[in-house]
Length: 107
Image 1 (spheres, one colour):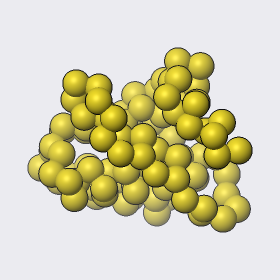
Image 2 (cartoon, helix red, strand yellow):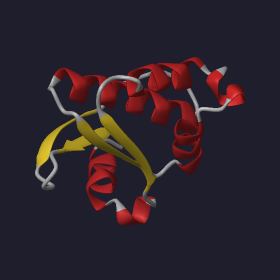
Image 3 (cartoon, one colour):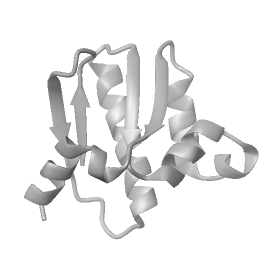
């Protein structure tokens, strides 16, 4: 599940989809790829990615050789090379009330 806001905090769009069986880590990374692709298509050039998955945020921020072996991380790295500003930030689930609310609606 992903929720996209514009710079002053208004909700822009959100989505969720079935990606089959995978870890929470992989699901988070796939959501990041999909979200970055969507905001790129909408012309956004400054993006803040908040996630409650600390491992996913750490790996997207590191871009080291070991992590780059993961195809999803390579996709995120490729997307980040475009002409825009992207920041990845860890936000505990308890602090991310909008995503937590949406998550509960789809359970």
